[in-house]
Image 1 (cartoon, rainbow, N blue to C red):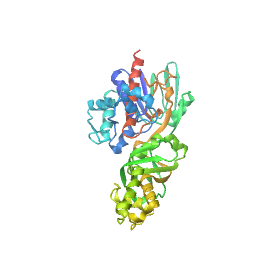
Image 2: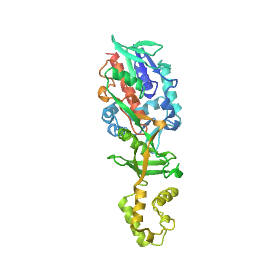
Image 3: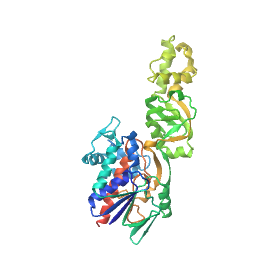
Image 4: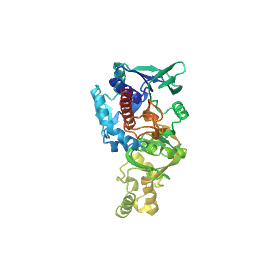
Length: 405
């Protein structure tokens, strides 16, 4: 029995290992187009590998996926984040949980995950061939014919785990399998020559961000100012949930920032009270902003106030300008940048084509698809890897059951 897994990433390796454990007699081979295995595993989390998240209740876990939520909820009943942690721990990779729920190897090195997967594949005699890019595939006479250009082979079961891949999408489309056109997700916002360039490197821990003109676009979390624009988890989550809408806008829109989650009405009332109770105090000396000093000064100046302005002089219009700068600061965004460590796409094989109890593509026998090749993506926090682990595990069990019929 020959099984081919196209793609040497997280989903492909996890599927191969779990299939090989139950099918020691099978010939299982991973074909990787590049000369590097598990590339995203190695670079994710700044080289630490954010393996998964502590959220394990299926509905709560699935809620972190802008695309694939309904599909994945039942999947996570079969293999959830707790199962992932147990799997790696039993194979000699101790894990740790950070305050925000992200799970990393205790070593703080992605090499721990990489070595575990490679070692397990080797132990179970999984073949790994680098530099083999699939050029064409056809089904006939109860097996799959694979053309790698310089080599052709036939296999009984085929698992596609290539990640977002135009070549594979084109092949599948020609076979009548629907593909949702991919667009970037998890990206940073570019703002050329923005007014806070001098603050590059400065961050706030809990800002509220939204996009003017897009309903229900609202995220809370860290925001980092960079020389090219704005990033950090709140921005990345915003880009993920609204990936298609932002693509339609050609990444030209207005970002609105509430720098510390202020209540607009309460802040206005506070300033009016200061104007009455502390008329001679300098507005710039106000300590209640809760922001880094340089950011407070920047926002103060953006409200067209002077260092010598006191509360008796600020006036109603001055209060409105200052409240707006703090609660509804607007930035013209004119592009995006790849968040390289976690780069994913929204789009892929239409989930209507896939059985979520097996990860089999229903139009063809012996054909499975897992990982980012599917129209599934998540926000940051280990969730994209979790979809890869769960899909790989279930596809492995499914093809084992299919073979053992």
